[in-house]
Image 1: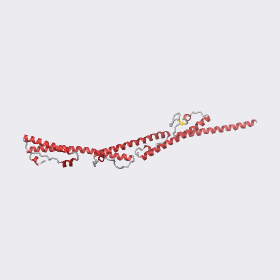
Image 2: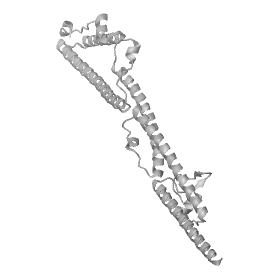
Image 3: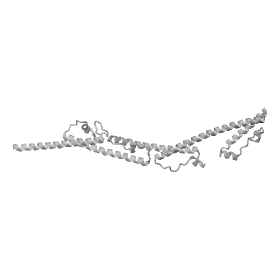
Image 4: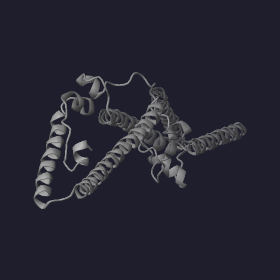
Length: 296
């Protein structure tokens, strides 16, 4: 408040270009100029009104103090409002920074050099909270996309391997279950293990097909009637030399590990029967030959 105000007159200091620039920065001088113009216009109107009414110096001083208090309260409220916005920016930035760290570790990436900010790209030499938040949002979005791509790849490999292993009666390795590590090395290992499961299933099919063929050949040779469930499956399991299904069904043996043992047991049983019959025929042949010799 100026000396003129204490004497009953309102005096508003003019805003100099230097002070406006110092407080507001480039481009904001017009805003501060408007504030000072508004203050001067208000002062002139009040001065005219008080002169017309005949307000005393004390009344004018009281009115001015009230006006200053109201203006100070308004300014403080605005500052608190903007501080709240700033705090929200800091909170959001901290949350995104944490997510960047978690995703980076999960994807097996190093921290690396920070990406160029909007402020640095625009050349103004400083990074404000809005630019920092925008940069982090772009970074997080990129990391999220990579995370989802790798998750889909991992899950697709796991789903296929799990389906094959289930039919084979084999457990799924913990490697396929872990989704925390999504590094390139981990996904390469998962892909390799997935190919190994494919290869193991192919080898299992070859073993089963050969056992089925062995059993079918023995059953035809022995004129063996298919009465049991396994024997009926053996008869109908192959289609054009391949298993009609990887899963066991009433018409197919499948590739379960237990099936291999059951087919091996059945093949041994049929082979034993073949040997038994051959021995029996040989014995009968010998008996007939002996009788024939006696008849001579």
